Image 1 (cartoon, rainbow, N blue to C red):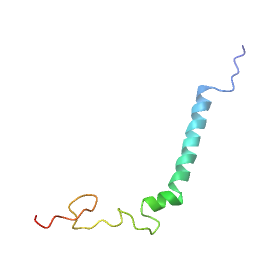
Image 2: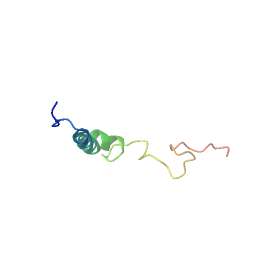
Image 3: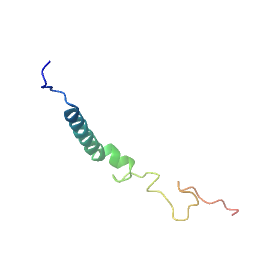
Length: 65
């Protein structure tokens, strides 16, 4: 067996980290992510939050309180 290995632990980890960075960059710049986070001009539950809401999800307060 020779000491020259193509798949060293450091190279494998470096490639995996590189792939993770590419995947996350693509994810955060996708139209679906922008739409789901309310940044594409689409009305979502986050953009409908009311300042007078009682719950973090935007649910209205009960009238008897």
